[in-house]
Image 1 (tube, one colour):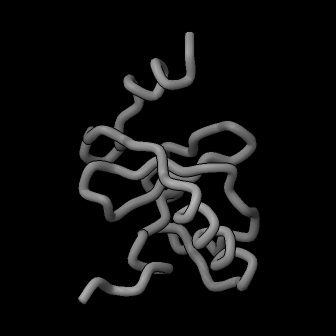
Image 2: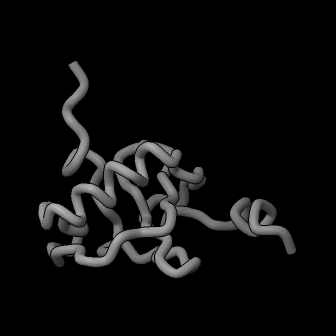
Image 3: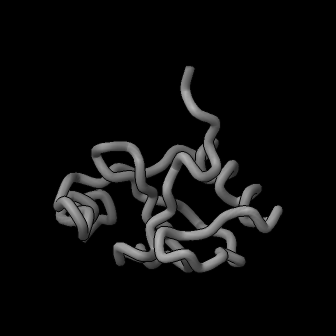
Length: 89
């Protein structure tokens, strides 16, 4: 089964909304925040390993990391996007 087909079945574990693949720019910003030591996941654990990619839930407020090709679809593993992105004006 193709990865894109499989991704159609993946859902946010919290609200069951669709997940979309994060853009390369967003992944670069997440990894920069991780390398700077200023990023924690929703569970409060500091993230120290960069991500390969990410899945964003429909509301656009949480990113589920993909590490070593495996999506981490646990509520506490989600990364709040507002923790590394500047607030929109």
